[in-house]
Image (tube, rainbow, N blue to C red; front, side):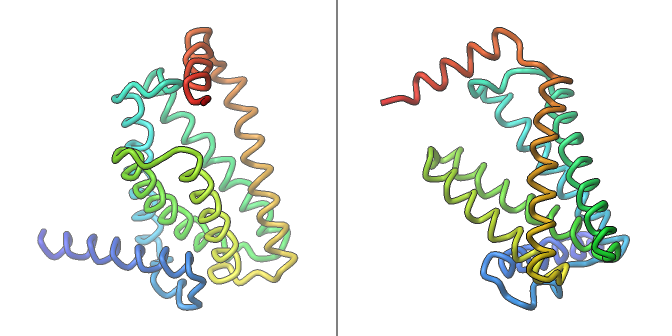
Length: 200
């Protein structure tokens, strides 16, 4: 059991180095991730853990606009992830690079894991607001571009195609969520109150 525990922590530590390499554009980024079946499963476990944290903490703390059931929160994550992976699979197949799907999923899952933990930790310490959103957005864009460039080894126009597909999948996910889980009057009121309180 201790040996297996060490293997898990080694995988987490190596993935952390891989995500850091993606942020700074280090060409060795791919070497830090495990693209085997075991690595794929491990990345999904990491994603599940951080998804539970990301959806559970706001519900527990009663953050405005975040009320609802745990089922709804988890279902939202599943829908977004499924559409994101589906879009990636379609584009990579069109680009004749289906071999790049597993590396994409692994690296993206771990990037989501560490970026979510970082932003959640900063939010809990009171560091947040528009500046954090802007910085997080910039980091996500950098990671996505470098993931496509260094992990998937796509060309410039392929990177653009891939990122556009991911953007479209995000928009479609929002549309699906709006239909499947329409906001109630209470939730709209909470969002309105939150927006009003954030104004100077």
